[in-house]
Length: 172
Image (cartoon, rainbow, N blue to C red; front, top):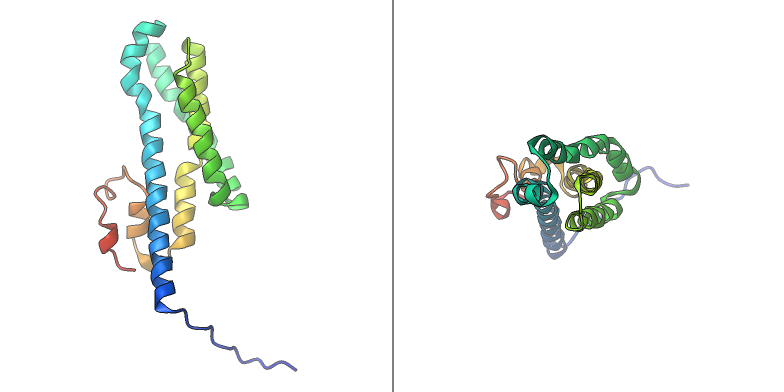
């Protein structure tokens, strides 16, 4: 017959706790870097479109459609991305998203007309949809609630509270 008394969990050595803590901050830094790259990719067309207008021959209205088209698929694919992240986890979904959006970003250079440029923007929106939900999932998985606001702030560069981020001075 088994007793109902719970046995205490073995103590984790201090060196293992420090290593785990460093790993958590490395992961959060990489997640934040991934999000920063995603922001750069999605905004690159707004800079390049001035030059592309002459090459591809489109007007300001078409430029507005091209710039907003990213958000059409980005918004639509937020829910399926969240489901995929819950089902398979950010360890699998995040790298797939990075490869997907990287391919569509590279394909932008091959666009030879408004139609192909629109297609690349739509593909980019699909690929970037899981990025922010994945970062949130990473923070929720790797940091206890008592960590406060520093982990989410450090994982979202571009928000008002994140850059510059005093991550290393935060309580652990």
